Image (cartoon, rainbow, N blue to C red; front, side):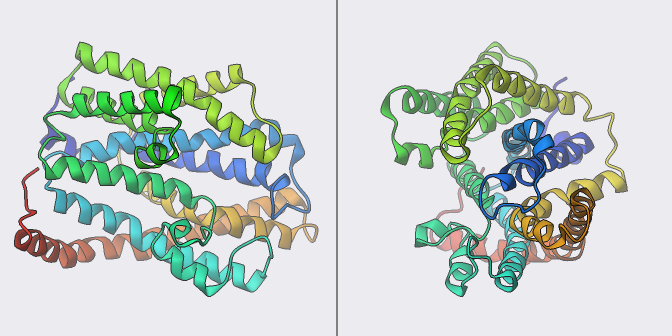
Length: 365
């Protein structure tokens, strides 16, 4: 089962591409079929018959974080911190900028008082962390992008000091320990934000899975993987409390626990099938839709559903909106993100390496 980092890098895992799309569609279902019937901007014609099922869709974010932990740990192997940082920026920011600007334009035209659309909000969102500038996210889903950026930051620090690959299990153990202490005793908002403690078990689970795929099973890795899963079960209550506060209802804990098992099983199944699902052109197209779909769907989709219904049947409206956001996602992915990625890396990496060298920050991975 063990394989080196070099062979891992050569292997494109089509199963994880498809699993990312499943996670994104789960979040879409949560927002369209459940959240938009409760929170503003409220759908004029909702989908109450689907809400009991759609409530589970928010756990698609947890699946995203599991996959992200694996993929980022995988892509960090053998890279310097500058290579990693530039690759992540080129992957994240162009799509974000285009989708955020598209949301701003649509929301400005719609002028819905429940949504942000003033120019100062657009400017603040250029930095992604808009709340740091006392402005709202252009779309509420951006909070999870901030979690990803914090995670990337810690990986880059580990690469800078040359400890990420050598001390991977020790670093994960420390991260989980901090999360346990903060969850059980300290309850520090600063620690929660700095170490993304609520979602640490999912990122950590992905990192540990990558370690096992790359180097084989070990007692320490399995114990930490079990610890991450147990802690993820504990963190479910935080999400339940948040849903109760914002929506007035939440899933019973036994159902959340069962859903968490399903999320981890899907992730494990995706890894087991990684060599059976070929990265065919269709799989690559579907995987490429995931990030822009996640960024575009929520507020633009809700505005679209309200604009179309009751002129057409609400289910027809849902189909039309899904077709529109998937088409827009295809355009962003294949005509903006992919063409820009390599030129952007070629432009930025030499400059960052030069700056790092001048500042004596060019430590090896």
